Figure 1 (cartoon, rainbow, N blue to C red):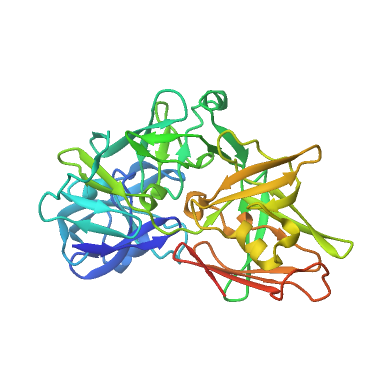
Figure 2 (cartoon, rainbow, N blue to C red):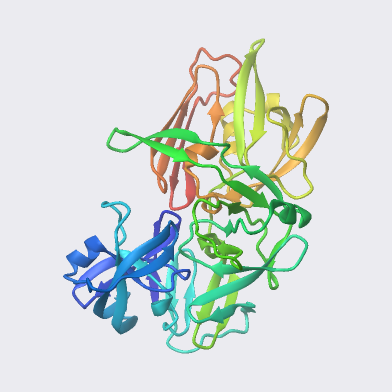
Amino acid sequence: MKIPFRRYRGGALVEVQINDKYTEWMLFDTGASATFITDAAARRCGLRPQLMQLRVFRLGKGEVAARPVGLDTLRVGDSAFSKKQLLAYVIPEDDPEDEYAGILGMDVIAEMGWFSVNASHLTFHRSMPVLRSLIRLPAIVQGRRCWFPVRLGDGQPIRMIWDTGAAVNYLSPNILAAQLQRRGGKSAVVPQGRHELYAALEDGTEEEAVIEYRRLWRFGDATLGSLSLHPLPIFQYPEVFAWGWGEYGLLGFPLLTEYEITANFTTKRLFARRYRQRLAGTYGLALRAEESRGTLRWFFSAVIPTEEGAPLPPHLCEILAVDGIPVERWETIPLIQRLMFPQARQTCSIRYFDGRRAMTNRFRAVGIAYLGLPLFWMHTIRLPRTELKFEGGYLRSRMTLEIPKQLRGVRGSRRRLYVEYRDDSWRFG
């Protein structure tokens, strides 16, 4: 039986029924050892936590004190799977308007028998599926944890927790930068320091988004057993997780945009097959144009690391050609669209002048889902006397670029670019 997901802040929500009366949406999270329910959802469902008991859990934002509550039944989908007498834990919600009621953890997921999961849906199998066409994963299952040995560049595999509740992939700060560099890793700070951004919401108000420092690593090769995970952008962000020694990383939800995982935690067997969701991507470039003698000169800077072996451009470089076509022969709107709004895994060749010499670099687009950043950070476009409008939020947004007629040097008749980001893909108007 196939159960569709709802995407939520880089993860996936699955519909559940609590005590055969209440329908809620919970985060499907293989990184959580237990099942959690928010106090608001507990009140909606008439659940009463045990006030005399308290347990502390380490969740994404640190330690959280939670009280146990008993659920008579919890059903996933249309009774495709059910668990009776479940002990869940009540946690405070971060946002009273959050769309999810809690976290479906490994105490439930580990008892689902054979199931398959990708970025779009969860499938339950009534019997053991045909495994001949699948690739066996070298997973380590211990209790309510599942680890994958991931090889990043050169060196021994790093043991990473499979955590579908994590919006991006993370490395522990317990691994030193010098060790990652010896593996061939290249890194960049995304964004640099403390950066305040403003987004116009649908109700007309503005929301301030403050993004703290984090370092983004990229490796020339990343494998899980015989599976290629390349490209695998992976963050080091010590402020998010309370890492313990011996914990080295999280392999998050973006894995499910590339592969479908078939698992049975009772038998400790996990398999994978290629599942490539069509994703919007980014080359991680900031684009800028300047008027010069009746034409436009185009410049770019790189925000995220480039492919292994390719030098990272300096802060600002002048574009000479794109895909072998001189930049002055490109129409303005198609040029912006080509550089700023590719599909994931698409490549682009840019010839540029870095102030000393001309050189060519090939960029490979990373899926937006891998980065977990607000879209307006990854799409910086600056043209003289031109306004870029952004509306929406984290998962859905609209961007409109209007080029005024008084701006000289614009090639082509189109002066408006409309881009909508929805269901992980670009839609142009």
